[in-house]
Image 1 (tube, rainbow, N blue to C red):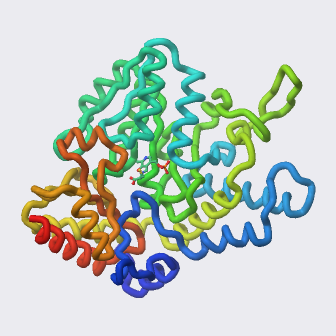
Image 2: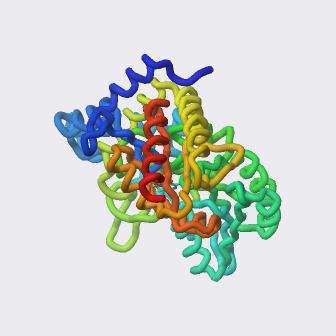
Image 3: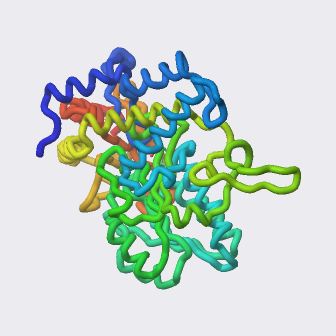
Length: 410
Ligand code: C6P
């Protein structure tokens, strides 16, 4: 199978109003997709429709609008379950995003299972959101945060990972794809290795869910988390998938309306799954927008999106490598549509600022993965990250812009 044809890509790009604007008089080349993707019209329309005609609180009204909004919200839960191939809708909890999903698990799973001296095993490439909550949980229990280190290519040492599992951490928490390097971790193998030691696994899917098919049952992960805004959906909404056997046992982490069953002044019983974990009025518009984003991904064909992004990645990577002084950070054998680089004698933010003036949006800095920067001994990187709507022509403009920036600075 190939990526998109020229007319398919054109049609796809036409669904994104934000792509058709100029920045400093130059056509926008948006290559900051790992931070957040642009939104297709159907997502924007879904949110507008909700606030224009359907706006209502859910799960608590007998009137028409409330019942309709409740049904639409719960339909998206079923849609998400289907999208990630969860066994049941009840295993899908709506959150504000990846960060909140991980904090929920750290708080609730931590209360369920953690005792003095307990540890969590992560990798050296985690985003701060999948590092700091575990670091703090371990500290609070006088335990150690175990870290499977990276090699010079930005891959996890599987030998060391296997050895660390023997120390019996209470949980393994690993990213599917590194936001800073683009490394794709062999998560199926890593999950199987952890399970062979009876250790549950959380997968941070923030950077994978919009780029490849996810089947949580096939992966057999215990938790899988992601954000709506990195998959063409709105900000402020995300998902925590958890196996029912864990979610049933885990205590609630926030208290208030909707997550309760019976309340008296001195006692409370809690609601069933998934409501036990959704205290207060949820982000209904966000959830409906997320549902539309899933429609977009399914209509566009996730497999084709992944292939298309790989074609652009490999093309841009080869061209960039020919610029003198460029050092690509992260050269894993399995990688996704992210290129991190530094240019000898320049600061990443200077390159990023010059690219911006040429209409090219990239991210610079540590990408909320400071230990990765420490590992590669760089202050930060310039990062270009690709999405379904990017083109080879944009990759050309990007590489030319980098060349121009290098010429100006060196
Ligand atoms: N990475 C980036 O530019 P939130 O902010 O909760 O939606 O996602 C946090 C997060 C967690 N894990 C990974 C692997 C991520 O990449 C991110 C977000 C963005 O790389 C913003 S820092």
